[in-house]
Length: 140
Image (cartoon, rainbow, N blue to C red; front, side, top):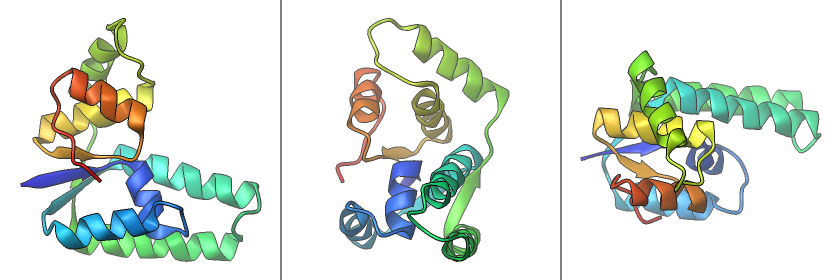
């Protein structure tokens, strides 16, 4: 079984975050195939860059986080590349008027479904929307 890690989980794994312990426990308890998309990696990078701009971390600390992330993803995860079908699938989800989804969340859900992975997220709204469409969500 494979699990798709969204940016909320990735940030928790690589920063001092209130959800770090939960992310660590989940990964240690579930020796699964880990999937990280290039889109989730970009979201992760955006969060780290925002932490630098808001002076929560230094540029040097951010470079270390990026290096650790790159090494870990290269050695531990499968990388999923976003494609046009993911964007179309996300658009379909966004056009459903019964789901409270943002574009990044719809893209993450679409990628996870395409690669056949269980979605792992700390975003409660995203998880609720994913459940509503029948996506498989891990309990973290």
